[in-house]
Image 1: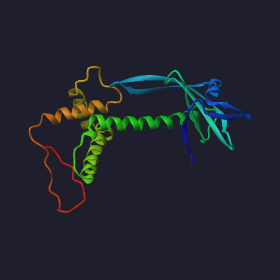
Image 2 (image 1 turned 135 degrees about the vertical axis):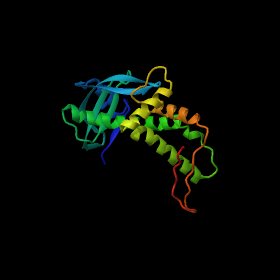
Image 3 (image 1 turned 180 degrees about the horizontal axis):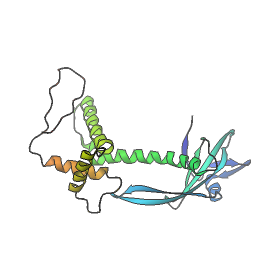
Image 4 (image 1 turned 45 degrees about the vertical axis):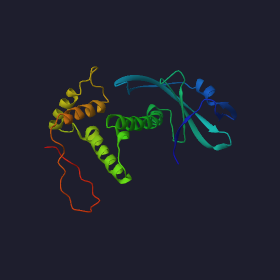
Length: 214
């Protein structure tokens, strides 16, 4: 199986037959490549400048398995150490593929945190698991509407700009603007005097029904 794993600095690796700690090996890695990424932090965006490089390593007791240690500097005082069995060549795109693959994990966690905070997913109060599942499905559909569908056409782009405006953000709208979209949608719906119109559906059907506002 292919993998990308974050490595603790005091764990040991084998290089040229010698056993050394990953932290010591990282100090000797030439950080030949650079990249700038944008991370959402504190309701805004932050540019992070990364430098990264790699070297060939092996695991103690697993000398027959070739691995690559990728060192990434820029996220903190200590470098981030990644080791992988993916093929890595001495070119930017090959090494960046490993870094980007691990950073995708952070994107997933940030999206989950966004859904929990903006849609108050953990505040749902129901008595049965099936009802909890149905409500969670509607929350996911709402999050998808704001993240992947809203703004894909001219009319929706106008709607999105209006929603972002009423969100009343003090420091502008960051590139990761899903929080502002969720705030704006909540503000607009809170001003409506009528509740959702639930469409009729056949009895005893397991199919979920989405509601609409008139």
